[in-house]
Amino acid sequence: MRPKAYARAAVLVLTALLGAACTGPPDGPVESVSGQNRTPTALHRAALEAGDVPGYEISGDRSPDAVRGTPIADRAACEPLAEVMGEAPDGRARATVSRGLGSRRTPGLAVSASLSAYSAPDAKHLIAELRTALTRCGKEFTTVLDGRRAAYREVCAVPYAVKGDESVSWTASALAEGAPAPVHIVVVRQGTTIVRFMAINLSGRAPATAAVPHEVADRQLDKLARTGKS
Image (tube, rainbow, N blue to C red; front, top):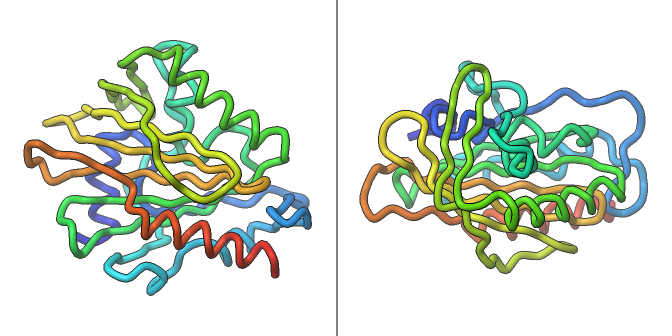
């Protein structure tokens, strides 16, 4: 299945932007991981492209039926976990560029990787808020976006070794239509850039698991570090 097809299926489960998309750039300069102005063009330059990750098809085109906007959680404590699954990690993002990846080796695995530019304080606050939400939200919450409801059960923080200044990682079982699908989300702060990875297993096989592939996370963070120095 190609990345766009993955995105169309995943959006029914996540009611969010799992597949490929590019959000519009804001006006004015945006800080970079190197302390200089990072423009939306620089975010595109740092994002994964075809050939960057062997074994994956990469797309930057928005799926025609992708859900736009920000999911709304049923409880205030869960809002950061819901918002991070929207078009941008939260409303403080100054620009976001996303990619959808379809695995050729693992049928049913869909992955997304996005880069978002933040101010330094806002980037740090986002990571802290996600950590707090994981401790306060409990093991289940629901979201609504564009009239579509999704339930996230078995929400659990999990360790994930990844580069960057700091990160937070969790898994959940997502249910919107049909059988539950395992989801894994990793959010990394690298300087003033928030890097967000999502993986979902749409195979429908039991037992099913989902994990953000390290080859995707490592190559994206390495590419961001390289472009931040240029």
